[in-house]
Length: 362
Image 1 (cartoon, helix red, strand yellow):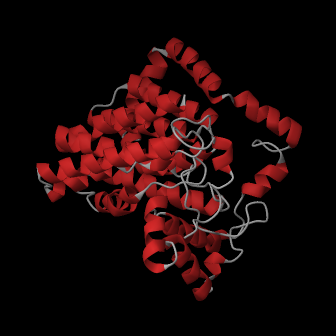
Image 2: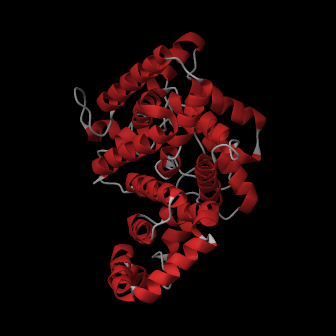
Protein backbone atom coordinates (compact mmCIF):
# COMPACT_ATOMS: atom_id res chain seq x y z
CA UNK A 1 0.00 0.00 0.00
CA UNK A 2 2.80 2.42 0.86
CA UNK A 3 4.73 1.56 -2.30
CA UNK A 4 1.64 2.16 -4.42
CA UNK A 5 1.23 5.49 -2.64
CA UNK A 6 4.87 6.29 -3.45
CA UNK A 7 4.31 5.53 -7.13
CA UNK A 8 1.06 7.48 -7.28
CA UNK A 9 2.78 10.51 -5.72
CA UNK A 10 5.39 10.35 -8.45
CA UNK A 11 2.83 9.93 -11.23
CA UNK A 12 0.60 12.74 -9.96
CA UNK A 13 3.51 15.11 -9.44
CA UNK A 14 4.86 14.40 -12.92
CA UNK A 15 1.46 14.99 -14.48
CA UNK A 16 0.98 18.37 -12.80
CA UNK A 17 4.59 19.47 -13.30
CA UNK A 18 4.50 18.65 -17.00
CA UNK A 19 1.52 20.94 -17.49
CA UNK A 20 3.40 23.86 -15.97
CA UNK A 21 7.01 23.26 -16.98
CA UNK A 22 7.29 20.65 -19.73
CA UNK A 23 8.57 17.07 -19.73
CA UNK A 24 12.29 17.73 -19.05
CA UNK A 25 11.61 19.68 -15.86
CA UNK A 26 8.82 17.29 -14.88
CA UNK A 27 11.15 14.28 -15.06
CA UNK A 28 13.69 16.14 -12.96
CA UNK A 29 11.11 17.06 -10.34
CA UNK A 30 9.81 13.49 -10.29
CA UNK A 31 13.25 12.05 -9.53
CA UNK A 32 14.15 14.74 -6.99
CA UNK A 33 10.89 14.25 -5.10
CA UNK A 34 11.09 10.46 -5.09
CA UNK A 35 14.69 10.62 -3.86
CA UNK A 36 13.71 12.25 -0.55
CA UNK A 37 15.04 9.62 1.90
CA UNK A 38 12.04 9.76 4.21
CA UNK A 39 9.72 9.03 1.27
CA UNK A 40 11.94 6.15 0.12
CA UNK A 41 11.95 4.58 3.58
CA UNK A 42 8.22 5.09 3.98
CA UNK A 43 7.59 3.40 0.62
CA UNK A 44 8.39 -0.01 2.11
CA UNK A 45 6.79 0.38 5.51
CA UNK A 46 3.38 -0.56 6.85
CA UNK A 47 2.88 2.98 8.16
CA UNK A 48 0.15 5.05 6.53
CA UNK A 49 1.81 8.48 6.36
CA UNK A 50 2.74 8.20 2.70
CA UNK A 51 -0.87 7.45 1.82
CA UNK A 52 -1.78 10.89 3.19
CA UNK A 53 0.59 12.41 0.63
CA UNK A 54 -0.89 10.27 -2.14
CA UNK A 55 -4.42 11.43 -1.32
CA UNK A 56 -3.19 15.04 -1.23
CA UNK A 57 -1.64 14.73 -4.71
CA UNK A 58 -4.83 13.12 -6.05
CA UNK A 59 -6.88 16.00 -4.64
CA UNK A 60 -4.52 18.54 -6.21
CA UNK A 61 -4.98 16.89 -9.60
CA UNK A 62 -8.75 17.11 -9.29
CA UNK A 63 -8.59 20.70 -8.07
CA UNK A 64 -6.52 21.60 -11.11
CA UNK A 65 -9.13 20.04 -13.39
CA UNK A 66 -11.96 21.83 -11.59
CA UNK A 67 -10.10 25.12 -11.83
CA UNK A 68 -9.78 24.71 -15.59
CA UNK A 69 -13.30 23.40 -16.24
CA UNK A 70 -15.60 22.50 -13.36
CA UNK A 71 -17.33 19.14 -13.63
CA UNK A 72 -19.63 17.76 -10.97
CA UNK A 73 -18.14 14.28 -11.37
CA UNK A 74 -14.68 15.67 -10.54
CA UNK A 75 -16.15 17.39 -7.50
CA UNK A 76 -17.80 14.14 -6.37
CA UNK A 77 -14.52 12.25 -6.82
CA UNK A 78 -12.71 14.97 -4.86
CA UNK A 79 -15.15 14.52 -1.96
CA UNK A 80 -14.57 10.76 -2.05
CA UNK A 81 -10.81 11.27 -1.84
CA UNK A 82 -11.30 13.65 1.08
CA UNK A 83 -13.45 11.04 2.83
CA UNK A 84 -10.85 8.34 2.16
CA UNK A 85 -8.13 10.55 3.65
CA UNK A 86 -10.08 10.73 6.92
CA UNK A 87 -9.74 6.96 7.35
CA UNK A 88 -6.10 6.87 6.23
CA UNK A 89 -4.73 8.92 9.13
CA UNK A 90 -6.04 11.65 11.37
CA UNK A 91 -3.21 13.98 10.26
CA UNK A 92 -5.14 14.21 6.99
CA UNK A 93 -7.66 16.43 8.76
CA UNK A 94 -4.84 18.82 9.65
CA UNK A 95 -3.93 18.94 5.97
CA UNK A 96 -7.40 19.17 4.49
CA UNK A 97 -8.18 22.28 6.56
CA UNK A 98 -5.64 24.54 4.78
CA UNK A 99 -6.40 22.73 1.52
CA UNK A 100 -10.08 23.66 1.75
CA UNK A 101 -9.28 27.20 2.83
CA UNK A 102 -6.81 27.85 0.00
CA UNK A 103 -8.99 26.34 -2.73
CA UNK A 104 -12.36 27.57 -1.48
CA UNK A 105 -12.36 30.41 -4.09
CA UNK A 106 -12.29 27.74 -6.80
CA UNK A 107 -14.76 25.33 -5.26
CA UNK A 108 -17.24 27.98 -4.14
CA UNK A 109 -17.58 29.92 -7.39
CA UNK A 110 -21.27 30.72 -7.94
CA UNK A 111 -21.35 28.81 -11.22
CA UNK A 112 -19.85 25.74 -9.55
CA UNK A 113 -22.35 25.86 -6.70
CA UNK A 114 -25.19 26.15 -9.21
CA UNK A 115 -23.88 23.12 -11.10
CA UNK A 116 -23.73 21.06 -7.90
CA UNK A 117 -27.19 22.22 -6.92
CA UNK A 118 -28.60 21.24 -10.30
CA UNK A 119 -26.97 17.82 -10.00
CA UNK A 120 -28.41 17.29 -6.53
CA UNK A 121 -31.84 18.28 -7.74
CA UNK A 122 -31.96 16.27 -10.97
CA UNK A 123 -29.61 13.37 -10.21
CA UNK A 124 -30.17 12.83 -6.49
CA UNK A 125 -30.41 9.09 -6.99
CA UNK A 126 -26.75 9.09 -8.05
CA UNK A 127 -25.69 11.04 -4.98
CA UNK A 128 -27.18 8.54 -2.52
CA UNK A 129 -24.66 5.74 -3.30
CA UNK A 130 -21.89 8.38 -3.47
CA UNK A 131 -22.73 9.57 0.04
CA UNK A 132 -22.84 5.98 1.28
CA UNK A 133 -19.49 5.29 -0.39
CA UNK A 134 -18.03 8.36 1.28
CA UNK A 135 -19.22 7.18 4.68
CA UNK A 136 -17.64 3.77 4.07
CA UNK A 137 -14.37 5.31 2.87
CA UNK A 138 -14.22 7.64 5.88
CA UNK A 139 -15.02 4.75 8.28
CA UNK A 140 -17.06 7.10 10.44
CA UNK A 141 -18.27 4.24 12.60
CA UNK A 142 -14.75 3.83 14.00
CA UNK A 143 -14.77 7.41 15.26
CA UNK A 144 -18.23 6.84 16.71
CA UNK A 145 -16.96 3.70 18.46
CA UNK A 146 -14.01 5.62 19.88
CA UNK A 147 -16.31 8.29 21.24
CA UNK A 148 -18.65 5.72 22.75
CA UNK A 149 -15.85 3.81 24.48
CA UNK A 150 -13.37 6.54 25.35
CA UNK A 151 -15.44 9.71 25.24
CA UNK A 152 -13.18 11.09 22.49
CA UNK A 153 -13.49 10.55 18.76
CA UNK A 154 -9.72 9.95 18.37
CA UNK A 155 -9.53 7.20 20.98
CA UNK A 156 -7.99 6.81 24.41
CA UNK A 157 -7.69 10.26 26.05
CA UNK A 158 -4.20 9.60 27.43
CA UNK A 159 -2.91 8.76 23.96
CA UNK A 160 -4.45 11.92 22.53
CA UNK A 161 -2.96 13.98 25.36
CA UNK A 162 0.51 12.52 24.74
CA UNK A 163 0.47 13.82 21.17
CA UNK A 164 -1.25 17.16 21.68
CA UNK A 165 0.82 20.33 21.74
CA UNK A 166 -0.43 22.48 24.62
CA UNK A 167 1.95 25.45 24.59
CA UNK A 168 0.06 27.45 21.96
CA UNK A 169 1.93 29.84 19.72
CA UNK A 170 5.15 29.44 21.71
CA UNK A 171 5.00 25.70 21.09
CA UNK A 172 4.32 26.26 17.39
CA UNK A 173 7.34 28.57 17.13
CA UNK A 174 9.46 25.99 18.95
CA UNK A 175 8.37 23.22 16.62
CA UNK A 176 8.98 25.32 13.51
CA UNK A 177 12.49 26.07 14.74
CA UNK A 178 13.13 22.40 15.41
CA UNK A 179 11.86 21.38 12.00
CA UNK A 180 14.07 24.02 10.38
CA UNK A 181 17.12 22.49 12.08
CA UNK A 182 16.06 18.96 11.20
CA UNK A 183 15.64 20.03 7.59
CA UNK A 184 19.41 20.68 7.42
CA UNK A 185 19.82 17.04 6.49
CA UNK A 186 23.13 16.12 4.88
CA UNK A 187 22.59 12.40 5.60
CA UNK A 188 24.77 10.21 7.85
CA UNK A 189 27.73 10.09 5.40
CA UNK A 190 27.78 13.89 5.22
CA UNK A 191 27.51 14.10 9.00
CA UNK A 192 30.52 11.80 9.36
CA UNK A 193 32.54 13.80 6.83
CA UNK A 194 31.90 16.97 8.84
CA UNK A 195 32.96 15.06 11.95
CA UNK A 196 36.23 14.06 10.28
CA UNK A 197 36.96 17.67 9.31
CA UNK A 198 35.89 19.40 12.51
CA UNK A 199 35.83 16.71 15.18
CA UNK A 200 32.06 16.92 15.57
CA UNK A 201 29.17 16.03 13.22
CA UNK A 202 26.94 18.78 11.88
CA UNK A 203 24.08 17.54 14.07
CA UNK A 204 26.38 17.91 17.08
CA UNK A 205 27.34 21.46 16.09
CA UNK A 206 23.71 22.44 15.76
CA UNK A 207 22.85 20.89 19.11
CA UNK A 208 25.78 22.70 20.73
CA UNK A 209 24.56 25.98 19.27
CA UNK A 210 21.08 25.31 20.63
CA UNK A 211 22.48 24.61 24.10
CA UNK A 212 24.65 27.72 23.98
CA UNK A 213 21.76 29.98 22.93
CA UNK A 214 19.53 28.47 25.64
CA UNK A 215 16.56 29.37 23.50
CA UNK A 216 13.18 28.43 24.98
CA UNK A 217 12.39 26.67 21.71
CA UNK A 218 14.82 23.96 22.77
CA UNK A 219 13.66 23.54 26.32
CA UNK A 220 10.47 21.82 27.38
CA UNK A 221 8.15 23.83 25.15
CA UNK A 222 6.00 21.54 22.95
CA UNK A 223 7.72 18.39 24.26
CA UNK A 224 6.75 15.78 26.82
CA UNK A 225 8.34 13.02 28.86
CA UNK A 226 7.18 10.31 26.45
CA UNK A 227 9.27 11.56 23.53
CA UNK A 228 11.98 13.28 25.53
CA UNK A 229 13.75 16.60 24.90
CA UNK A 230 14.61 17.79 21.43
CA UNK A 231 17.70 16.30 19.84
CA UNK A 232 18.89 16.10 16.26
CA UNK A 233 18.71 12.56 14.94
CA UNK A 234 20.84 11.60 11.97
CA UNK A 235 20.00 8.19 10.60
CA UNK A 236 18.55 6.13 7.78
CA UNK A 237 15.47 4.93 9.62
CA UNK A 238 11.91 5.24 8.36
CA UNK A 239 10.77 6.85 11.62
CA UNK A 240 13.56 9.31 12.29
CA UNK A 241 14.97 10.26 8.87
CA UNK A 242 14.28 13.54 7.10
CA UNK A 243 14.11 14.59 3.46
CA UNK A 244 17.74 14.96 2.45
CA UNK A 245 19.76 17.84 0.97
CA UNK A 246 17.46 18.47 -1.99
CA UNK A 247 14.65 19.49 0.34
CA UNK A 248 16.49 22.35 2.02
CA UNK A 249 18.49 23.38 -1.08
CA UNK A 250 15.74 23.20 -3.70
CA UNK A 251 12.28 22.07 -2.59
CA UNK A 252 11.62 24.49 0.25
CA UNK A 253 13.04 27.58 -1.50
CA UNK A 254 10.95 26.61 -4.54
CA UNK A 255 7.88 26.37 -2.31
CA UNK A 256 8.45 29.92 -1.11
CA UNK A 257 9.09 31.09 -4.68
CA UNK A 258 5.84 29.62 -5.98
CA UNK A 259 3.96 31.22 -3.08
CA UNK A 260 5.03 34.62 -4.45
CA UNK A 261 3.77 33.85 -7.98
CA UNK A 262 0.08 34.24 -7.19
CA UNK A 263 -0.62 36.64 -10.07
CA UNK A 264 1.06 34.52 -12.74
CA UNK A 265 0.48 31.02 -11.30
CA UNK A 266 -2.39 31.17 -8.79
CA UNK A 267 -2.85 27.40 -8.65
CA UNK A 268 0.81 26.84 -7.74
CA UNK A 269 0.62 29.58 -5.13
CA UNK A 270 -2.45 27.93 -3.58
CA UNK A 271 -0.60 24.58 -3.43
CA UNK A 272 2.35 26.27 -1.72
CA UNK A 273 0.05 28.01 0.75
CA UNK A 274 -1.60 24.67 1.52
CA UNK A 275 1.76 23.01 2.19
CA UNK A 276 2.94 25.84 4.44
CA UNK A 277 -0.45 25.99 6.14
CA UNK A 278 -0.21 22.29 6.94
CA UNK A 279 3.26 22.86 8.41
CA UNK A 280 1.85 25.60 10.66
CA UNK A 281 -1.19 23.60 11.72
CA UNK A 282 0.86 20.50 12.47
CA UNK A 283 3.35 22.55 14.48
CA UNK A 284 0.50 24.09 16.47
CA UNK A 285 -1.39 20.90 17.31
CA UNK A 286 1.24 18.13 17.46
CA UNK A 287 3.88 17.78 20.14
CA UNK A 288 7.45 17.34 18.90
CA UNK A 289 8.78 13.80 18.56
CA UNK A 290 11.82 12.35 16.75
CA UNK A 291 9.59 10.88 14.04
CA UNK A 292 7.45 13.86 13.16
CA UNK A 293 9.12 13.85 9.75
CA UNK A 294 6.68 11.10 8.83
CA UNK A 295 3.79 13.47 9.45
CA UNK A 296 5.44 16.12 7.28
CA UNK A 297 5.53 13.80 4.28
CA UNK A 298 2.22 15.37 3.28
CA UNK A 299 3.93 18.74 3.05
CA UNK A 300 7.01 17.37 1.28
CA UNK A 301 5.06 15.82 -1.57
CA UNK A 302 3.36 19.15 -2.28
CA UNK A 303 6.73 20.80 -3.01
CA UNK A 304 6.90 19.09 -6.40
CA UNK A 305 4.84 21.63 -8.31
CA UNK A 306 6.78 24.48 -6.69
CA UNK A 307 10.04 22.91 -7.83
CA UNK A 308 8.70 22.67 -11.37
CA UNK A 309 7.74 26.35 -11.51
CA UNK A 310 11.00 27.38 -9.85
CA UNK A 311 13.20 25.43 -12.27
CA UNK A 312 11.14 26.67 -15.22
CA UNK A 313 11.45 30.30 -14.18
CA UNK A 314 15.19 29.95 -13.60
CA UNK A 315 15.51 28.60 -17.14
CA UNK A 316 17.86 25.88 -16.01
CA UNK A 317 19.84 24.50 -18.98
CA UNK A 318 19.38 20.88 -19.94
CA UNK A 319 22.85 19.97 -18.69
CA UNK A 320 22.03 21.26 -15.21
CA UNK A 321 18.72 19.39 -15.25
CA UNK A 322 20.60 16.23 -16.23
CA UNK A 323 23.00 16.79 -13.31
CA UNK A 324 20.06 17.20 -10.95
CA UNK A 325 18.53 13.97 -12.22
CA UNK A 326 21.83 12.16 -11.77
CA UNK A 327 22.17 13.46 -8.22
CA UNK A 328 18.60 12.43 -7.45
CA UNK A 329 19.23 8.92 -8.77
CA UNK A 330 22.35 8.62 -6.61
CA UNK A 331 20.41 9.78 -3.56
CA UNK A 332 17.59 7.37 -4.40
CA UNK A 333 20.11 4.51 -4.65
CA UNK A 334 21.71 5.52 -1.36
CA UNK A 335 18.37 5.61 0.43
CA UNK A 336 17.46 2.21 -0.98
CA UNK A 337 20.74 0.64 0.14
CA UNK A 338 21.05 2.42 3.50
CA UNK A 339 17.56 1.72 4.85
CA UNK A 340 18.29 0.60 8.41
CA UNK A 341 15.01 -1.26 8.74
CA UNK A 342 15.46 -3.15 5.47
CA UNK A 343 19.20 -3.27 4.67
CA UNK A 344 20.47 -5.13 1.64
CA UNK A 345 24.02 -6.06 2.60
CA UNK A 346 24.63 -5.49 6.32
CA UNK A 347 23.19 -6.14 9.75
CA UNK A 348 19.58 -7.02 10.31
CA UNK A 349 16.94 -4.35 10.59
CA UNK A 350 16.42 -5.10 14.29
CA UNK A 351 20.11 -4.63 14.98
CA UNK A 352 20.14 -1.35 13.11
CA UNK A 353 16.93 -0.14 14.69
CA UNK A 354 18.55 0.44 18.04
CA UNK A 355 21.11 2.79 16.50
CA UNK A 356 18.54 4.81 14.60
CA UNK A 357 17.38 7.12 17.34
CA UNK A 358 20.57 8.58 18.73
CA UNK A 359 22.64 11.44 17.32
CA UNK A 360 25.35 10.56 14.88
CA UNK A 361 28.74 10.13 16.45
CA UNK A 362 31.96 11.35 15.04
